Length: 297
Image 1 (cartoon, one colour):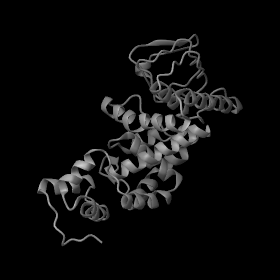
Image 2 (spheres, rainbow, N blue to C red):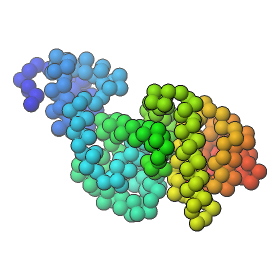
Image 3 (spheres, rainbow, N blue to C red):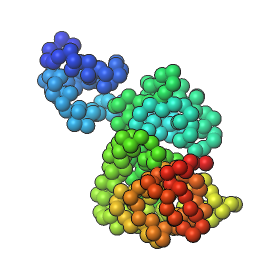
Image 4 (cartoon, one colour):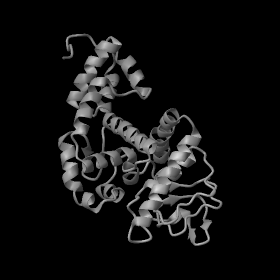
């Protein structure tokens, strides 16, 4: 229990900053009170400075979130991942648009009500988001799961969620690259030891995506979801030359191609995905996409 009689040294503005950061969550503030005493001798300014460096989650809060997160259903986790990916409040229709599975779209209201009861999301009359401490935890879980799937070349979440969103506000996409995509690159660089090994894993996954499409009853399959777009964004972040890559018949959703070199890249019969690029370009003999105006279907 926090020692409420112990002195806390700081200004009213610093208290308000801490309360605002944890959105007034009583349990989180109780945990933080202990941490300020134990780790910062009651000095609010030191805690605020530490939190501004990006290290916001203490073990006790992390443990609480972990216990709650592990009890969530798959659709609840998917909704939590998407709210973390979006980085800012979104409307219900926007969240439904992000989610691929029709059965999950149909359960979204029930899902959000469950998450709200657990205090894992914040809901206003028009938008949904997460408290900063929750968003940081969920982002860390997203990164860990994505890395595991790429390392093993066994993908599920990579198909269900985008690492970044191509057509969003520039500052949001920059944030997604900084807190999601680049940390994935850094973690994979440590576990797989080289850029070349990461690229090989991406090629293995791409081959499996093509196998999935070939085994489907139609030439084009949406079952691979966001995976191809995620691979493109990951390879782009690694500064891999995409020349010679084959993405034909795959949905290319949320691929950010600004500055990409796409000579001899095969996008034949790919779906109309949300792709972002400054200029219209020819991407294969059989496919011409005006990159700045394509909408996911």
